[in-house]
Image (cartoon, rainbow, N blue to C red; front, side, top):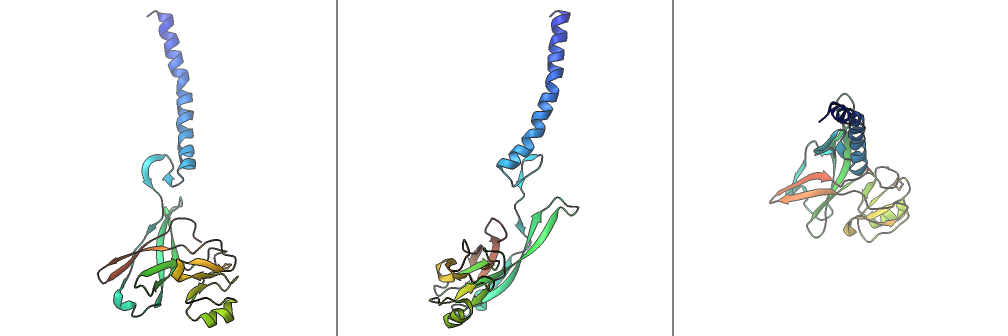
Length: 188
Ligand code: FES
């Protein structure tokens, strides 16, 4: 290799360093665009999806009969780029025993505009207060009168809500009923 060729190779290599750095700096935001739950500058790291702070635990005896409905507060830790590196949010929920014996749980945050909805057991009460007479117990929102049929997986049966409320994963092992996580997505 002559001295001139060696210098050219060196200059070419040196010139490509800024290009490589720019590429590196662009990869992280681009990956966050493709996978919004990864941490900045940590493409291969774990997801920063919210995680439950602690499970909500019941026993079968807490649900003595069909349509027993228990309110609970579910705490989730969200990754935030603040000094604490997290924000804890409390999500109100309802756990309900269906006539089939299954226990289901939903966030009480209305998917319409975020009000907190109620459990309404009596169809006549729902007809009076929410302008709709259902077949059985429902969740009903006092803000714009959306009504959700619990027996049909939270299906919207009246009002402007665009979707059923977000559901929690419920695990049943023997006598123990545990609410472990909330369906992914926005808070409402
Ligand atoms: S916020 Fe519940 S119906 Fe509008």
